[in-house]
Amino acid sequence: MIPRRLALPGDFPLTGVSLASPRIWGWTLDSVEIMTTCRVLRCQTPGSDVVTGGHHLNQVHESYVCAEHKQQIDSGENWDVQDTHVLMGRDLPPTITGWSLTDSRGTQGFVLSLKTAETEAKPFEAFVTPEMAKLLHTLTETRRGE
Ligand SMILES: [Zn+2]
Image (tube, rainbow, N blue to C red; front, side, top):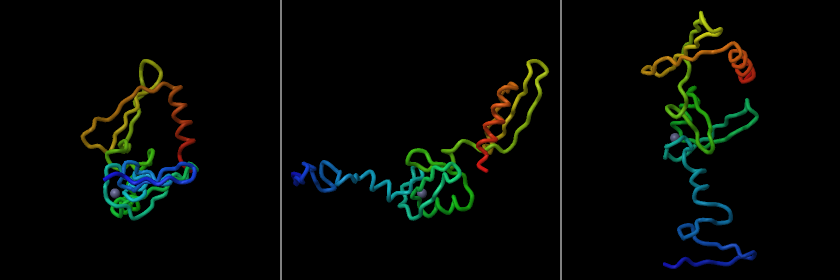
């Protein structure tokens, strides 16, 4: 079947949704899909609720999610927004569940050891200089979200 095109004033082509050009007045099939499918990465369930985040950053984001993911977010699971996707579970960095500091007896500084919620992962260890410790303190103070 040959697509039937109509010419509108301004030479803007109008085609059917299933034809060669899916664009109709600035709406694309991709944008319609973004609006109707849960935005959690890899979830293909139709969205039914909106979650709003970023208030603490003054960068409010609204995302369409399915009922299951809405329930998980409402019950306190971590989530984040990157580009047009909501990230949850394995798509997020692991949460720190414990930490320790061991002073260096050589170079001034300490070893920071971080345990995460990933039970199979070894604790992450890093040597922290006094300058880096001050920088980390400043960064965490300004990003606490209070
Ligand atoms: Zn979902």
